Every structure is written in structure tokens, then in C-alpha cells.
Length: 347
Image (cartoon, rainbow, N blue to C red; front, side, top):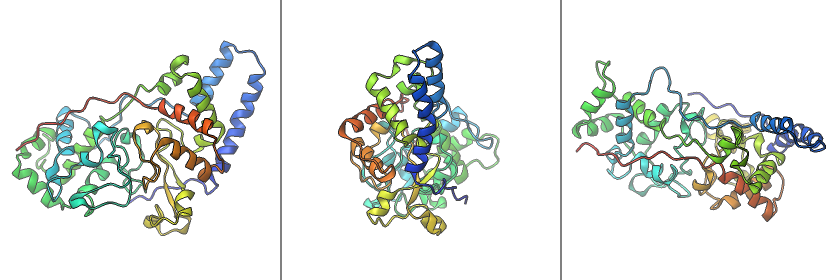
């Protein structure tokens, strides 16, 4: 298993403030000049150095190319509740495609009502993450897909039990269509590949912020632009950057340590004291819909989450007006969700 690499041990506030000084020192000089086409172009490049539009498609790995048959099989398996011991829980139970890919619970609920230790991350745009789960213990969607099926607190089946149930339900023919070149296509590894292929279709491009980055100046209103500037100036973009505005780095979450939480994050994997309360930085795409927030679901609203991040990570108390501006910007990160129906499952 690959252990995720943590960012520098410098506090987020220090990193973010240093980046802000570099960026906004240039802004101060530009503000002394008259607005011109050249200045607007420079402003756009300033954002482009930190953020990127969300790609419309996710790249598949060489050993799992996308095919329509594979995606269709993964679609069925994602909704298949026979992959849990009780026959009630499916992948979609915690990662509800009709609810921004989450279950809106503080902590995930698995088979037989067992409650997990963490909040369910959204499945939308997970294809762009370099590692999965709050502690990054899975490096690919394929590896992530089979974890919950085998976890006692989630779906609680062994690979053999899962495949036996699928065989009894008539899935073998679908595996043969999805993996026609293989001598034995009906395998647990191919189950993972099919689910991962389906998840790579769950992309939400076209957010107002994407259009803004691509040059549509009016895609953001004045409050959203003010929120974007405050987001940058405060140092939020030190961790929340790139196409997902986060998701691909790990940092200490001091709010968790201050509350004496039992979940120690990355430390539970590595045993390294430097990793105590280190978690993957949350991606912010569609964040207005993925409440409650943080690994423990302790922030019920986006406003609360912004306030906590300011005080715990940036050593800054945002005013109510500042919180409102940042929240307005964060809502501009909501993209276009694909139409996903409940598939007809083999019986």
C-alpha cells in the first residue's frame, strides 16, 4: 500500500499567507494602473496559475480502458444491494448519485445499521483524485471500490461471497460482455474495474467558476468575485487549488486535534507522530451540496465550515459578511450533474 505524502509541516496559515503575499503584491501594483485588456488578461492568468477548469472526462488507466459494456456493468454493481450481507446496502446507499454523491449523514451508516467512523466523501469527480478515502489508503478507484464491500462496518462480504451472490443472480453474462478478451472474466478484480469505470463517468463540469476561468468574465457576479479574492487573500488556495480546489494533498486539521477526536487520520496508517490528525484536504467541487462537512461531519452548514476553517487553519476569524462572500464563491463551484438513473438489475 502506498502511504500518501504529507505537505510541508508549515502551518496552513503560514503557507497560505506567504503565497498571498506573492500574488497580491502584484495585484497592488496592477490596481494603480487603468483597467485595460492587458490587465484583464493578467488577472485571468493569476487565477489560472492556481486553479484549473474541471476536465469534462476522466482518463482511464491503461489496464482498465473504458467501454460501454464495462460502464453499464459498473452502473448495475454500484446499485446492487446484494453486495452487502443484509442485502440492503449498496455503494449508492452512502454515495447517493441523486444527492451530490453523499448520504448527508455526519457518519456513514453501513450494514445492519453499523455506523462508521467517518463522513462519506462524494463520489462525483473522485476520478481526479490521486488517492481515495480521508486517509488516502487507496491509490485508485479500483482499489477503493472493493474496500467497502469487504469492510465489516460497511457491506461485510468476502470476495468469494460477493461473486457467489452475483453468479446466483445472473451476472456472469454481463461480465463476459464487459471483459470479452479474458478467459475467466467473472472475477472480483473485474468487479472493481467495472465499478471504477462507472465512477469515471460521474463528472460535473460546466460550473460558473469553470466558465470564468475560461474567459467568461460575467460568469461570476461581484459578490462571488469578492469571495474569490478573499479566498485567495486569506490563504485558502494554499491547499484548495487545482481543478478540484483541493483533494490531492494532506494537512493537519487542528480543529480535530483541539477537540480531542479519537480519529487520528493518517497517523492510524503510518504510526508517525507527525501524521497525527492529518487528513486529505477536501475537494470543494459541488461543496454546497455535500453537507455535512469534514471527516467527522461536525459542520452542518457551509457557513459553519468556512468559519471553522478560518479559525482553526488560518488563525483568522471571518466576519459574517466575509463568510457570506466566501460561501457565494464556493457555490459557483457547483457543476452540471450527469443524468444517472436506477438501472434494471438482474434477478
